[in-house]
Image (cartoon, rainbow, N blue to C red):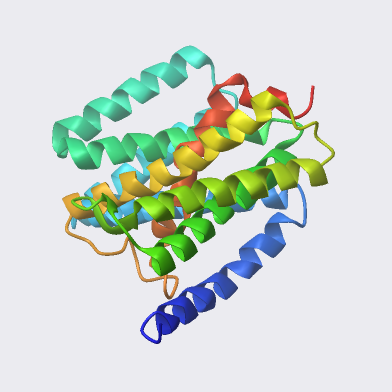
Length: 257
């Protein structure tokens, strides 16, 4: 037990450094929209600094990926958005290995999705639900996996993750997500239960995806910004697929009709 406490202490210290971000988010729009988009941009910076040491290439990629996200923020025509996505994919897969290129496209779609949700009238409520659910998935997976242990989930990609932790994450995310819906006075339907389970699964899939990416570039953390967590990609990898789910599918319609 004693060897586990220092790690938990470091993680709690890292969480306190994230409190200002949460405070800005809960200040309401447009602050919440800005802080979510900026977090996505920081993730892009970390990604580009990991895959190349060439400064010109880094900032060219940052501009390429971030500008794709801006196509939805400024309501560019869908045809031009598609052409820009194709151009981004061609450049990434032409000059970088497929593992790192795939991560670049995922981040591009993340920013694109944040831009789409920006225009959604219930952005604050939907993002609050997403944040609470994803954080609870991470906490549930960490606590259960850390103290129960057991068989590894994907030992080659992420040796620390266990099957018990994955189940703990599903339960934690489901309880917290539905609790948030109750708090927001949203009717808890069967569809909403399945959606919350999907969010819990995708949050862990994002974590595994980022772990696979870090192994492909031989990095332990995406950065050293947050003690006990690493970088923004390490902390916010659970949102990689969850935010696109709400931006690119009818999922958000289950909340406010």
